[in-house]
Length: 400
Image 1 (cartoon, helix red, strand yellow):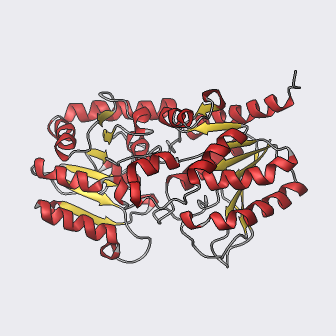
Image 2 (tube, one colour):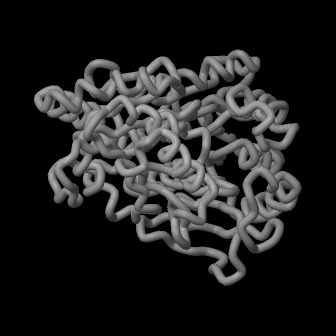
Image 3 (cartoon, one colour):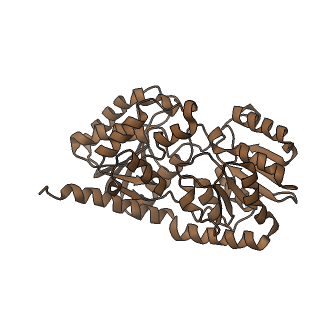
């Protein structure tokens, strides 16, 4: 099968940790690689954000990345990209007119907009993965939401026009249904995790004698890292490592890192909060293994890859009961879900793991088993392929 993936702002070649580089980049890269391993031809289309990068790059995992000229060849925050989507769609249509893909898989709402414009005249089915929904973002961020005002309406239009939707969690299906998108149009297929890379068996990073909590990811306010810092007041003799920060320069230069440092000082726990800045991808498995509990307390999270990586490394997870984490973290089995965005509730959920080594081991092992049983990228690729095959088959059935 010839598969075109469109990920307008999230290149699979991007270095993780930037403002707009996170879970979607990983998802696109790993899904493309899994589909190639299963014998399919995959091309990922993303916007050119550097003048010196090749027009087409062959990734080590066998898929091609095409850099589409649309807007300035420099980084642009994703919420400022809509004016360039018409040009992006035109370029896609020109390319696909010469070599028609069997299916297009659009990632994020702007990719969906561009993909439908390009694919519909060619009668190519489009499968949509939103990765995040404007309705959810607006609900939790309110006036701080920087999304373009047309986002929610466009997401609804994409849901009506596309051939199928791959939702990453059950919550997303419910949100889409509330927007008027039929549930039978959706297949729930989560993100995956590289089980060979993230595993419990390799070396652990160095640490001192204190029990260690780990928070990992981009430093943005919605991740709720300040809640974990405040929880530390109720957890004596425990340290917190916050792995994340700017791609370049000292972590102190990042405004959110500076705010978190201030929160730690106000809470009287600054001496137990370690902020090493951005941690290279190659170093993350060892950092997970050196942690007693991985904590994820965002206000909202469309899916959440960090809990999966922690589980794959055999570490229990304490997570907010939001979005995809309600699906991935099995409450009372692989970790604990917290239903209140409250430091005391978070501390209460963490405390048993710090005082019971057997509990930590048991739930860490259960997390590894769950990751292996459900979240390998090859399994996710196979499920996604079935979604592609369904929309192609539905198109071939003559109308009665």
